[in-house]
Image 1: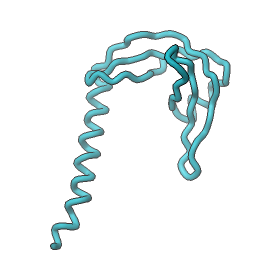
Image 2: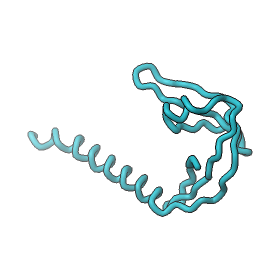
Image 3: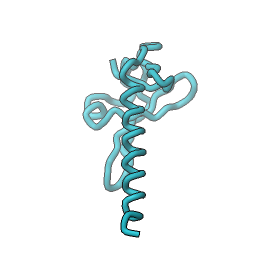
Image 4: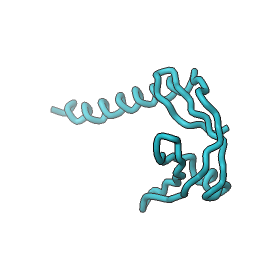
Length: 99
C-alpha cells in the first residue's frame, strides 16, 4: 500500500517528460512553409493569477489567437503588421514563429 502513493506522481512525471520531448522533437527539424506579414487585429491579457498575453491575427482561415509573451506584446500595437512564418514541425504540427 505504501508504493501506491507513488504511482500517480510517477505517471504524471512520465507523461510530462513524453509531452516535453514531443515539443522539442517537433520544433527541432522544422520547415518554414510560408512567411508573410500579418496584421494584429487586437491584443489581450487573460488569467487572474498567471497572466498570459495574446494577439489576434487574421490567418485567412479565420481569427487566430497567438501567444508570444509579454515582451512581444509590449513592442507591438494593434493594427501593426508583424512578419510571421507558418512552420511545420517534424511531427507534422503547424505553428507560428516570429521572423
